[in-house]
Amino acid sequence: MAFELNRLGDRFAAEIVGVDLSQPLSDEEFGAVREAWFEAGVVVFRDQRLAPARQVAFSRRFGEPIVHVMSQFLLPGHPEILLISNKKHPDGKPMGFEDAGRYWHSDISYDERPAMGSHLYAVEIPPAGGDTLFADMRHALATLPGDLRRRIDGRRARHSYTRNWRRNETVEGGRPALGAGQRDRLREVSHPMVRRNEDTGEEALFVNPGFTFAVEDMGEVESDALLAALFEHSTREESIYTHEWRPRDLLCWDNRTVMHRATTYDPAHARHMHRTTIAGGRPVQAARR
Ligand SMILES: [Fe+2]
Image 1: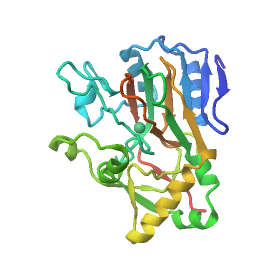
Image 2: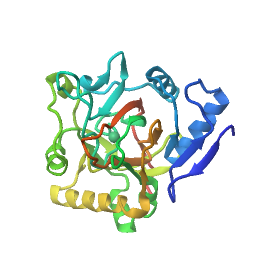
Image 3: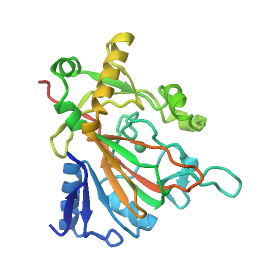
């Protein structure tokens, strides 16, 4: 292997040292990076000089980049890059998603084909806060009490971009309104609650508080209680890795394996990030136990 791999969290997440993403990777190097990423769930490349076109090219080797529904927050000239930012245009309008993901979620799980992976590059970061937390959903599944596991085996849950907005607004302060064209791209979808990663064969719990709102074919009271129990179990301390950003980090996560959330920071400081999002397939239901 042409690089070093340093474990970051107790159970998952790693730092890849010795790879320069400003240059194209050889097929062999790319293959090793891909394997390391999928195994770790989350990897970071430090101190990268990553022009937007290079980031898009790197992401594209894993799959087709998704152009995000929030078209007003795409980087001009590079629609594959979504701005996560608290900076403002000269007219005062926000440059990017300011409050993106301050609740646990798996990116774009509200689509029939959720994002496989996401790559987030730190252009500017605040001196404190604005961390990204990850929860290992393989570990969540592996440690799930048997009665909970039996209740989700072979079942599906419903995901939506907008159904949980009101719930998240009370916690996190709301999101920008959607235009009609944006709403047209969003609808409710159903996914297996236990998902098999088609690249590694590993199984993971696939529900998240941001977008999963109901267990299919289950009454509302029972469904709400089951989801609450699953969310609580998934976000126990032992399943979490907290990424404290450094400038020029490129952080990569596998949405099939982990869910994530951002923490708050002092808005007097700039936080400006470039995100590319890689398309995935329809989630594969894990075999019943
Ligand atoms: Fe996210």
